[in-house]
Image 1 (cartoon, rainbow, N blue to C red):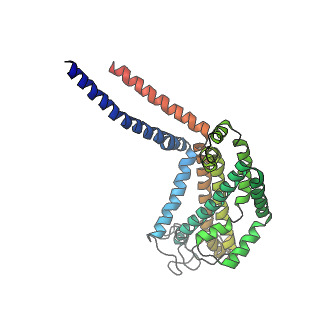
Image 2 (cartoon, rainbow, N blue to C red):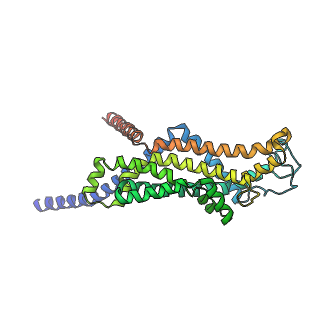
Image 3 (cartoon, one colour):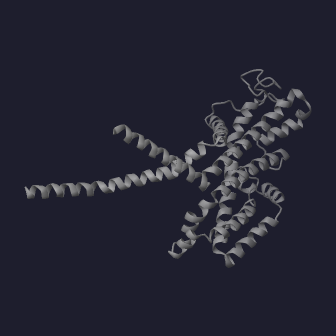
Length: 339
């Protein structure tokens, strides 16, 4: 009997050893899912601003897809009765222009360019600001002085004249290039603000501990510093996107940027030039692109405010605690029912 017991014990021991790594891996994946997917999603979805912001932004993305896939007619002259009012003919829900162009087609086919433009400009400005601000604030010394002197120099250059000169000189037609040009100097102020916050964060105990353990500077910046700056970075990303949108529409309206018939700024220019500002019959020609601009701006603001809660460590900790307490209550109820 003893050999049998020894064999069974060995089998049990090997079985536990084999299953232990699987359980550990499963728990690790569960923890990662809870921390990086479920909890942020709960925090974001709990705020009505996030829901409405995503709904609005999703509507514009859908319009862009409709334009890219060719599911709506291309805007062209004399394709409909002239100055048709909104909802007078559901084939042209937003009405038409003085030359018989479908306003709905103008708005839809302008959306992809606008979305690419504001995304490129916001990513450029935010990325440069984060790199320069965090490195300058964390390293200090001559690196800090050099980077901040460069930022001050960029801030001293008038932004709008610089953009106009670059636009006239380069005559960019690619929306990505145009977005970068419009935000060519926007990053400087954000970089200096981030640097000021990093000066405080780098003195925290966990940053000091990472530095003492010999962790590399890029890893400390990415793992310890940038997560604490995410609420501020998110809000300023939204502001940068809105700035690109307003600046591009304004420059197109003024005729500074290369002409493009499928653009909200050009539509506003044509409407204003043809007296839509003083004619109730043509007012929809002016209002349609204005409403499109205000709607996208509102969606960006709401989404930015909602995402601020996602990156707020206090809110996420509270939501995680509530989630764990709910799971614990469910487990207690299950145990009670079993016994």
